[in-house]
Length: 74
Image (tube, rainbow, N blue to C red; front, side, top):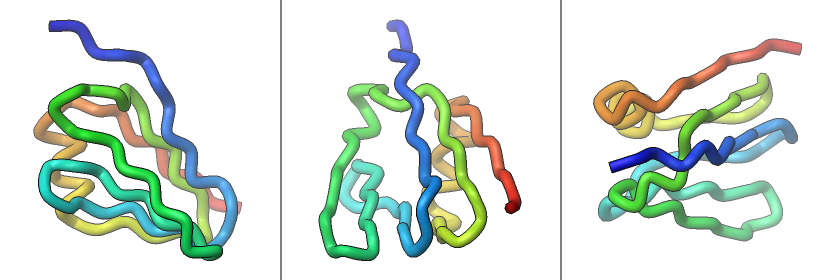
């Protein structure tokens, strides 16, 4: 089983990344929603910049599934 090397970047302000029914759910401030199924291993790295939020469930899942997380401040 190989992991795809897709990066998920939260670089604007007001985005939220959480978990819902086996998917990472990304909601931006305009209300659009994107879902990334965890078991399809679409995400290889997550880059979080200041001004966004993330759930503890999503952080725990990143650690459990060995997904790299980079946290940046402005």
